[in-house]
Image (cartoon, rainbow, N blue to C red; front, side, top):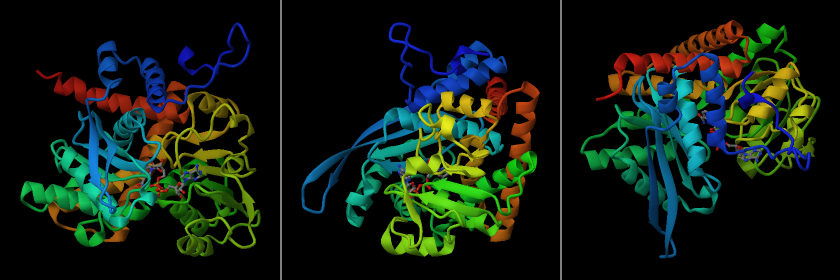
Amino acid sequence: MSTARLPVPADPITTAPVKEDLNSFRIAMRQFDYAAEKCGLEAGLCEVLRRPRRALSLSLPVKMDDGSIRVFEGFRVQHNSARGPCKGGIRYHPNVTFDEVRALATWMTWKCAIVNIPFGGAKGGIVCDPHKLSHNELERLTRRYAYEISPLIGPDKDIPAPDVYTDAQVMAWIMDTYSMTHGSSAPGVVTGKPLFLGGSLGRNEATARGCLFTVRAACKELGINLSGATVAIQGFGNAGSIAAQLLAKDGAKVIAVSDSRAGVLDRAGLNVEELLIFKAKTGSVLGFPSAEVISSEALIELQCDILIPAALENQITMQNAERVKARIVAEAANGPTTPDADLLLHNRGIMVIPDVLANAGGVTVSYFEWVQDLQELFWDEDDVNRRLERVMTKAFADVHATATKYSVELRTGAYILAIDRVANAMRTRGIWP
Ligand code: NAD
């Protein structure tokens, strides 16, 4: 086995464990290196795929409501476009870093290849706390960002989408800014738009629905009955809250959820519909009647069948992986498990459905939205969901078969499958000029 995956080594002098590296980009490289070595990827393509194709770093001046000027930092990174235009969300969060965006862009390349849609990988981000901006400030910041990245984006170049703390309204502003500066309306420049502006039915639920399809497939593989299975979900936004709803509809018992403030636990099962109404009214799950309060960290260690991290990176690390008790970890979030924790979970017999597979439903329906926009012909929701189910079920089977063939866990199987598809496109296209 490659040293890249060995558990955290001890410092030879102090015998204390060397601190785990939580840098998302180095984690993404480590995952890639391990899979590339396993599948014998040639050195030249390894070098190409270890680096993003291009990256834009931005200073974004914004006139605030009080008349002052603030400068925000932003990024757009395109990792690879061998299989098609780049695709990836835009994150607004105070902790966004260039390395995080580079990692997320890289993961997008593998994700699109795993579900076999004709896109490469990209990602964007702005260092900001959108909850502390007014609606007008958020609009001005978004439009300035859209203007600055508009030389890179376009329906056949790079198509942004929502991610943490961005939504359909933000996508509408980006679409409008791009359209105004290009002289014609271009709905295909972003996905995750409002329905009446060329959005797709089923897009809002797609990440969670895709995750559900992979959880169903994993349960089948492990002989777990999803009806009655216990579920804990960290993060109660687009991915987490809709996953809770869909899993409850499948008969699963959602015993705990958390958001950025705290979590709630009811071992008899939370009433997800009432919790959604409560969160919509109060802004948090905290204070939901008749539930115990738990921390987001404690949620990770709960006794349950299925754990769904649906918030941010590095939530399952060497600090807590030993205490994870779920049988399946379905990564709705990007990068929630560190490589060392991943190995530990695998050795403990816990199945991790990796992010590049578990949350690929979002980009899959984004692809459907883009196709509908280009054709100016829209599908009904059943059609979208049926196509999504086919894509996700096939992707799970392909990943599982690759992992079995190479005797590796699902994440490495997913990477090998993706690397093979991307490398094949690169070899056939050749290196320009
Ligand atoms: P969102 O903004 O809708 O929700 C984020 C949620 O995480 C919120 O409920 C927030 O309160 C919670 N949160 C933040 N910090 C937390 C913490 N420390 N502990 C617990 N909860 C915390 O974002 P989203 O779109 O649901 O994205 C969540 C994850 O899913 C991200 O990793 C994102 O990259 C990934 N993802 C999203 C999509 C999509 O289509 N939205 C697609 C693929 C992957």
